Length: 485
Ligand SMILES: [Zn+2]
Ligand SMILES: [Zn+2]
Ligand SMILES: [Zn+2]
Ligand SMILES: [Zn+2]
Image (cartoon, rainbow, N blue to C red; front, side, top):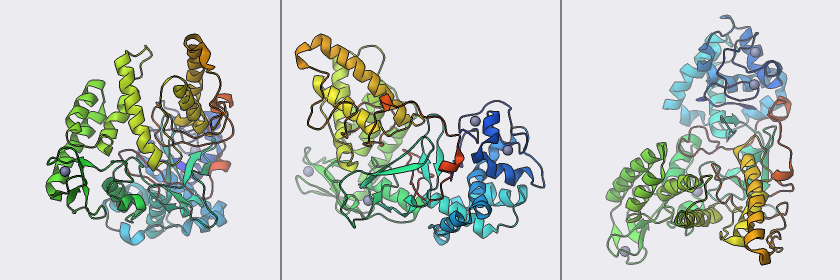
């Protein structure tokens, strides 16, 4: 099942593009952009279940307030149309007991449960069942990033994956929004498949808190247990005593724990460290709202005396900065060097926490290798997702780079890949999107290069992605609302 997120902006329930005009489904009144979308299979569930409601069709712009009900209605319809999938759905974890009395539960009572029953006349479904469906979605739905608006999907088999903060699989979606899972590393027979249900560039506290509030468990994976976060420094803070070491929690699984410097051994009380971090985080979030080069660099400068260069708050500033140093005009040498440095720092972390990713140097032929790797990594991504667009951009940039290399480094035979592990852009090699835009996770390897694939059509055919219920856990950057378990 794929459907809109609860807090979505107004979107067409057929193609998931933003809608602004007055066009409505003639039968049910939900916003839709076109006749094909009105007739689309994916719109059928809410159309059938709401058009005949006692209060009649939605009208005016009222419908936009009712989006939180749509995904629930789509799942409810499985009961009548696909009983086997309905049965599988009800087997998924919903954490009813843990959710009861939470703010989310109370909100869903009014935005979903009361509306589905009283507004849309679905009295045959008990309040308990509707809350259970909400819990199943919160626990199991994956966020699907589309170019303009994100949606969510519940996939039956993927819901069974275990969580790990360094997962051994990578997930993406094809053009029909079917979830595709691939091995990120070699996986031995009998080994459990794992996925990550939170942001892989968050620090241990943030990941664990998010997992606890949305997925109702506390992760104790190897990364969470390691104060250095596998040597990445994502949660490391400069020692103010020796000035050259880094302090890390003596027990990363305990939020109240003290810190110890790995260099001088000094023990630092945890409380003042946590309040200092909270203050810095507030400043970082303020800058993230509308990041500019000056603001990011200024705050990085300030944070540098306190945080590890790849502390997750530093990455929150450095990541947008990479894109801000990305004008269509040639960058001055100093800015180019700065951008290269930022990319290397980010890649050094991604290389560890996203096993699919590898770090590459960014000069001359090396830059070409990175582009080839990025293209290879992104080749599975459909054009309907930001990663697919990035793959196309990378292919264009590769063409430009080859022309530049031919002109400036004719002896370098730039059009060759490095043979060993990066065939041509269509070769099979993994690596992170070097200077990519939004998507920070999304690396994949696969057979065909996005540059050679026709752009996939928008999702029109619901059958294929109204998959049963199983897979994916979504992971937002700052608002962990509907990640998947
Ligand atoms: Zn549409
Ligand atoms: Zn309709
Ligand atoms: Zn973990
Ligand atoms: Zn120290």
